[in-house]
Image (cartoon, rainbow, N blue to C red; front, side, top):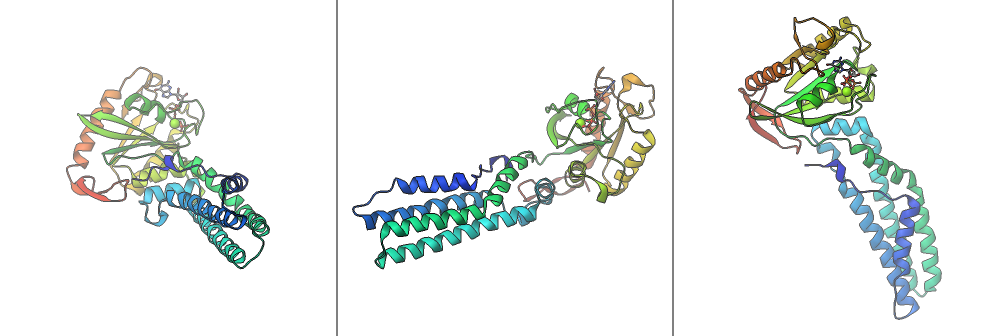
Length: 329
Ligand SMILES: Nc1nc2c(ncn2[C@@H]2O[C@H](COP(=O)(O)OP(=O)(O)OP(=O)(O)O)[C@@H](O)[C@H]2O)c(=O)[nH]1
Ligand SMILES: [Mg+2]
């Protein structure tokens, strides 16, 4: 499985030039000619190995399971990522050409130290040309750390308007403790935790808040929630805040709920949050503060998981393979 937290740090052009030339500087030889040839092959090898390591640390983005591919696209942009990796391959090829030419020149009788000096200059200039791409790849690596490792187990995606109490519930029922705060869009990425439901491991996913608006208007934070609903949810746990202290009217929240039911067509459990602040009980109402309703929610999830997983079909595993097991229709 692709673990995006294992992508290596990428040096800037300056750091990479320094690394290559420091290695070349240490190289010896019996005479000036041999020393120069050894330095050139060191430049060639160190840069080749470095570029290869970076390029190969990335998966083939075209073959990634959709959730991961779309997440990478939302977080960093796949086109830009591919362009940057291609730039590294270009630089590698150019350096190899320059070094090959220099070796030929020395063997042809040119002054070894003059050729080495000129090679240093050319190699440095090639690497400087990909400085933006190197920096982009390092930044991308840092940003892609947020992509979670997912398990192929029944998955509940918790969704709703911003600030309604999603993370507070996820903290209460699962192993993950996401940040909770009294303002919208506190959660900006997907948090994955686990809960034991009826003796079975269930994956619980906390998502950023969604507003009731067309997909084309959704921001990158909201898109992370949409991708979770689209690709990961066996069950949707939709949270409504009837107190409207979240800052959004219940009417709007209900309209989002209808949209999500219609669009994703997954078994959906609707619950009211903040039960300690209101008396509406026409849906399960829970309080993350008093614990009211929490047990009921877990029981409902257990029932839904059983129902959903009694039908056998194929699920997407994070590794990209598909596995047959009991799953939703
Ligand atoms: N009284 C009361 N307040 C709650 C309850 N659950 C959450 N809150 C408060 O509601 C606010 C939002 O809670 P969060 O859990 O961060 O809400 P969220 O839906 O994850 O918010 P975003 O990540 O911004 O979308 C915080 O101030 C919480 O303390 C509850 O059961 N009762
Ligand atoms: Mg949250």
